[in-house]
Structures are given as structure tokens and as C-alpha cells.
Image (cartoon, rainbow, N blue to C red; front, side):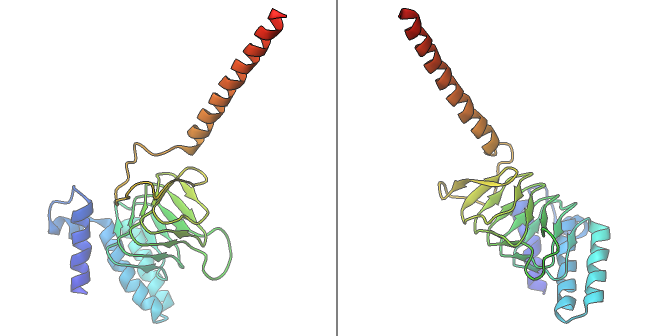
Length: 216
């Protein structure tokens, strides 16, 4: 347990340039507090102490603003940056080296039974305000852009943006664990740009036809 806690702290220093000292991180980082509380709640949940597990998770939610269901399975080196408004559902499975930002929801889509929340594979990044809904998989090394709503599986090594989320980059470049939130691809703008170009072509063709008619 001590080794795992040290690793959790180390991950924060790797990912957050604002982290200045161990004491500061341990006492003030809500994402770290929520993760540690979840480990306790998850242990209780696995041993069928369901009420106590939910009580721990709700107390953690009250103090951190981060709601993680005790049934969620979370891997190593998980990092929640800021974290206010993060919601992680009961049947979520989160792999290793995953990063999520504030306002992210890993939720369900209705009242279905069984596996109803997302699986986030290793090295994925879910940016601010993104919603990943349903029993879908976000592949290894993939990124979900800020504010996106993802309702379908995302292949490995992909970048997804938009509402609904669309894959814009896949295997084209080597993907790290950082996402430039200021320069996200915009599939809607790209489509409007294509339509504009098509309209220009049609206008030019109509002008050519008109000129031909005038010559006659």
C-alpha cells in the first residue's frame, strides 16, 4: 500500500507542473484524495460491504467533488487533474497510466443491466468536460478532446473530438499523453469547409454555362 501511495504521488509530479512539494500534494490534491478513498471503498465493495463502500464514496464526493462508484476498477498510475465534477460509473474499467480532467463523465446511457459503463484502456487521456457513455471501449493511447461526447468504440492510437465524437487521427503520428486543448481538430468545421469548396465549384460551373449561353 505504501508503495502504491508513493507511486500515486510521483504520477502527480510527472503530470502537473504546479506541484511543488510532497506535503502540498498529499494535503491539497482532491484527485489524490478521491483515488485513495476509492481504494478503500472498492475493497469494501469486493467484500460485499456495499453500504459502507457507498458511504465512503459519498463522503469522498462531499469533500472532493469527485464521484467514483466503489465498484469501478481502476489501474495503476491513474491521474485526475483538478477533478471537480468527475463522475465514474460502477462498471467502469480503467487501465494503467490513464489521465482525466475536470468535468469528465464515464457514465451509462440508461437503465440497462450488466456492463453499462466504459472501458478506458492503458495510456488514454480524457480531456475537460468530455462525456464517454455506455459500454464502449476507448483504445490504448487514445485521446478524447475537451467537451466531446463519445458513444461508440474508439480504436487504439486515435484522437476523438466533437458531438458526437468522431475519430480524427488514428495511427498517423506517435501519440503521447498530452493533448493540445487549443488546437483540437473540428470535424464540423471541416465538413462546412468541404461544403463551401463544393459550392464554389458549382458557382464556377454555373458561370461557365452562363458564358456559353451568352456566346450563342
